[in-house]
Image 1 (cartoon, one colour):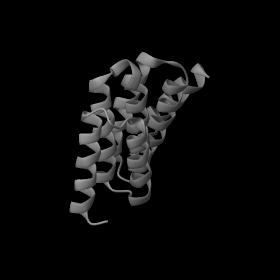
Image 2: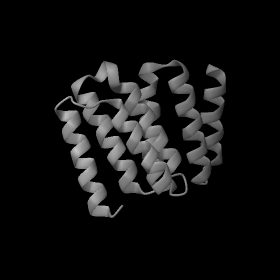
Image 3: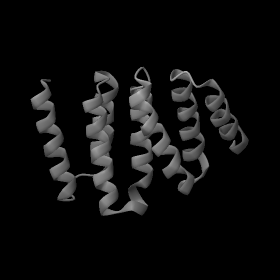
Image 4: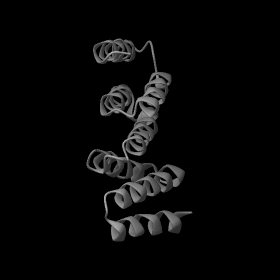
Length: 133
């Protein structure tokens, strides 16, 4: 799919979410595309969709946003400078959710920090995740 075509598809998905004619399944589809394409634009589209869902109902969709951020960080892990802010935001939001969401988000942050060449911080995030398990 050409970049302009893909951007048009994202625009249509976001419009459907805005009309409340679509939900988390759109985020799942965009994340699936992002994992295959491994492009920042694809990750951005999925996160934009998740943020829009949260605008409609944060309580119901905050977990979707955390998952989108985490998945985006994993997808972009070979680009740690791009992945790190996503992983950090996922952890920040997941702290409010607790449980498995926080544990998995901390594990993702640990992997991204390791990829960024920050092993001490990676170990600290991994240790915190382990302490919550």
